Image (cartoon, rainbow, N blue to C red; front, side, top):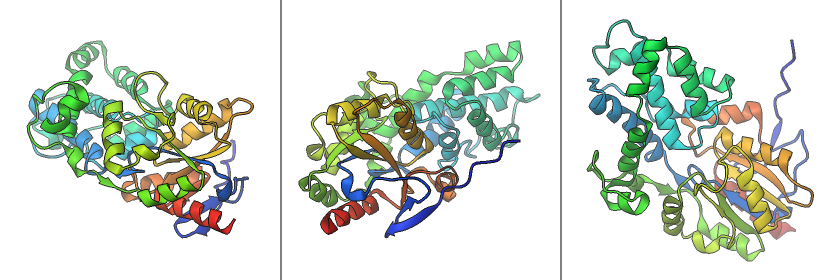
Length: 350
């Protein structure tokens, strides 16, 4: 039996910032670029995207499939289980995967459930199921393969009839954007949801004054996010960050590059920005996997990318933080500002 690798060792190097001591890291003052994820790093999304996933799945089961009951099938906090499973950087996929899990529970029952509460009680639990997804490599494709493998031929046909990821995605978009932003973001007006979009609940995390001061000191800034271009434009403008980004330092979900955790986005930013040593600030395992994948794929002459994972993202009960304590990152920070302050302080001392 192969022994588990030793746990990473960290030490605090600044308030709220810890660095690995068991591997070689670049000095903070040598970092010439900072690359940001958006959700959970620049803006707090626990009351937007995580809640929208839960609401979209609930709407699908209550109002499309006609399952009664107010018990929440997938809570906002439980969406972190899919993040831990990996390859669920896209929250539309996550909502579709959660719906597939609910349908598996529905179709595996000998009798229809009386309500959502009874459906939720059945096997498999979400923790069990996402654990299997993780073992098999993560993501929606794996999720659907596991669901179909657990069903007989007749039940698979019924699953394919009931499973409607495009509809779940549209419901998600309507709950997120609301009537004010649904058309600017997605090109249509809401049909299933009339209330204010949960995008209105997002709150800034980043202190833009720190970005301004580091920018004046010669640090370049970029974005690598799974947001659509329209969503990214909106949040970056609202934060006042768009004007501070490198002119070619933005990678979002416009269909041109393979999404995280594949390294294409980081490789593109390395080519376009020309940095020597960058840090990518993320909040979920896929972000760290992207940094590791970049390290394996980087070409000679391209800059180094290190990873700093923050505790402000999809981290209910400290689940994600505990994952990084076990699995590692280069730096662990309470939030993005602790990293930026430490970088600024290191440059002042330098």
